[in-house]
Amino acid sequence: MNAEGQRLSHLLDFSGWDEAGVRRIFETADAMAEVLKRPIKKVPTLQGRTVATVFFEPSTRTRTSFELAARRLSADVVSFSPGTSSLKKGESYKDTLLTLAAYGVDLFVIRADAAGVPAQATRWVRASVVNAGDGRRAHPTQALLDAYTLEQVIGPLRGKKIAIVGDILHSRVARSDAELFSLLGAEVWLSGPASLLPKTPFFGARMTPNLKEALSEADAVIALRIQKERMEGGLLPSEEEYRASYQINEATLALAKPTAPLLHPGPMNRDLEVDGRLADGPRSLVLRQVESGLAIRMAVLYHCLVGGGKA
Ligand code: CP
Image: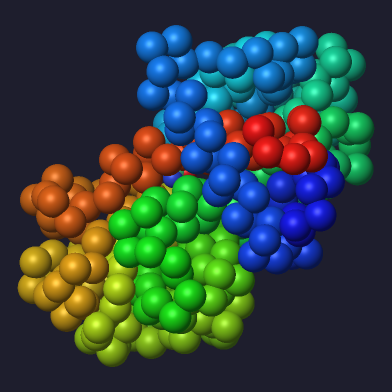
């Protein structure tokens, strides 16, 4: 998206975006956050529009917040559950989406285990498509809410050092965070065991297995979930080894700036990639990320279905 003010057809990743486009989403999210503070947290903006959440992979935060975001904007919501659907009888993703589209869905929020499913969906249906996470490729609304939360605490990301630590190899959050934070002028560092780092870093990020180098003087630290479900044999050193070398805890967070906040996109393996006490402590932004997610997703729905000027 750019600053021109046109409607956002789809949100798949940040290719073609510029900083002004991101700022427009953040301004709209500010307006949505104001709505969420009112006694009646609902506006008629999307009355008569239909949003379908189609999650072929499990989710708590992304799905709940998109459904709540759509309802707060007065849209109708179709919540598709794969486990009780005709997918179980062998129906394809394509026929599932075509069927839902025939009911007049205006926007699909899609999460899939395979990279590229939301992009393919844009060729199958005429509705807008928002990527809610596809394989290890992208999770753009998570990156938007991460950047939005971070800027509220540490100010503009331009020139800031952001360290992302953990299972980088399998992480769509790391990719989208690196893409968006770089677009906003941050210096992104990726760190984790060599077996959990990709062959080449992405979106101009720096990459090192040396945690101290990545965390040194960082303005913010993002811990990532160890994705046990995507772990092929031998990639993860023992959990004990991981904890000893890469866990974000008081000692490792002390390598960053004393003011650096801790973020985690969730879900969290408490006391594995992050010390649970730190996640519950005053430097943790974990629940602020969740809260921001609602305002950001309202803003994304608004720009996809209404667009134009300010909300
Ligand atoms: N961060 C995130 O995508 O969480 P969920 O899998 O719970 O949606």
